[in-house]
Length: 310
Image (tube, rainbow, N blue to C red; front, top):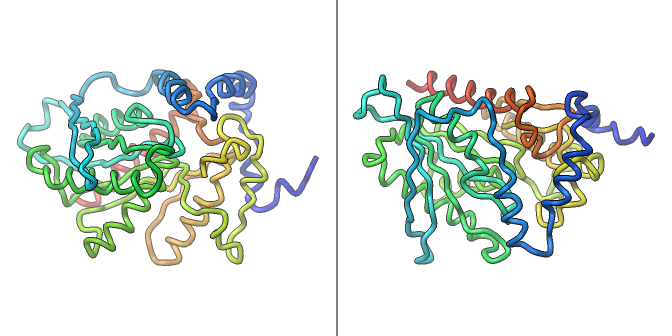
């Protein structure tokens, strides 16, 4: 055994015993999905791979879609989840969760974050706006980030119509979506001078630092090597790809941990939830307790944050 694999947070990539029995089937399923030389097929594969999660509500919300203009005169689609709880009066404005989906900036869409969007909409009585940004390789950087920026501005400009409270906004993103949400925060600060109304960010297994620019003098970056052959998404697959919630067997693990540490050093209150022994994309195991725990952590955190900002 290569004991060097356990240096620098390596203990976090010791496989979770509840996940271990799933590895052969998940690896086989993921390899069938993985068609990197055929982007359209890859997208179809991932869109068809979402299974229902038993803890996600099937009612208590309405879904609507809008085509909205963006800065290059194109249009993109956003999905709006609105809670329908009869105990909440129609005229009461609600908090907003603005979410960007994952998928390596190449695959994914609204349904990539469908479970989380429905869960938080119903459990926290929050309006959720999901942005279907344009993806690479047809639309390389900075188009996805610009789309997210434009969608966020559109959402706030229509706050009255959507019955949302612009003073209680949480930004959320997973994986590539986490990078876009982190980038959105920087854009808002640069373009608008601040983060007015944003009361929190929820970054799940985020991509937040290119390895070339990783601050090695302060943090270790062993997770790409340690998780080179991890189940589901791994370093070997990441020639495109490349909380704060971090998965122990994720190549992006050390980026998330370092990002959290840097935020803390800057005086930003940060809560880090680590899921040891689980790979990037472990939520494909829809009926496992660790998947439910991952989602309920977000519901709990959003609820707490909203209560603090009443």
